[in-house]
Image 1: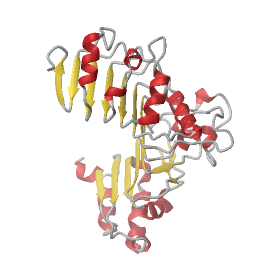
Image 2: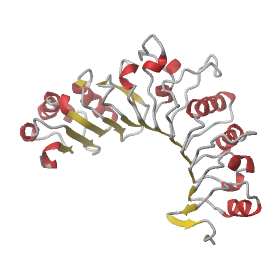
Image 3: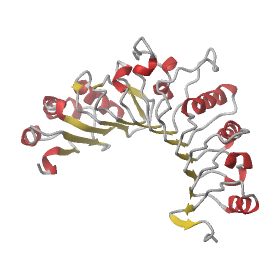
Length: 334
């Protein structure tokens, strides 16, 4: 089956009859649909047009064959699309990506009805999603939150999200890859130190990215970041990327990581991007005794290289350094 019939990209809600024909050609196959309505001239009036309605009703007819779904649009347009897609069962869906291309408050879209045996990957950019029943997410392995809401990660922060009764091991998701970028940290107004109830288990987490996490000097904000660290900490982590972590966030991170014993004894790959290397203390590096590959982007590595030369306990197993895209074997770097 040619990709033209199974990989569908929509940049406008026009000619729904042509879309119906394309969908009919792939009737026995899974389909991947990318909806890219990020044009500024695409207005809410367009969402009321018959062609818009017919376009998404054509997709709904085949919604049980959807394997991958990506939606990029402004907030009101996503809401208009969701009028057609919410509460529709998508038993074959493996990957969902919601990208809000305008600024504004984070909206929860859904509920999405997926099959936990198929659904493994979720990416939310300036959006959030609800699935009604948390057990639908138990197969989720890759989660990427960009400027999203930390409420998605914490049971106690959800307002209208149904967490089933019974042992959590039977329904919470166990991601292997987790990326959190510039995501709003949830703070309990009554008690910022309230015990967290993570919506996931980190026992299988092997890849973690923390990027552009901002922490104010207020106790509530710092407590929220500590909660985030505790929620995502797994001693069995294999790859860690820290990007654009500064000031209070970096100081708290060093305090949490620095310990009498290595925090990440199995970590093989460490990426440090756009953060002040000179402010990293020896205790930070001692948390990663097994790192073999170090990736540095947009940083000044001189203080690290000097420290490693003077102290053999700093990243003792390091074999390769990639600096701004150039890969060097340790010992060859200048």
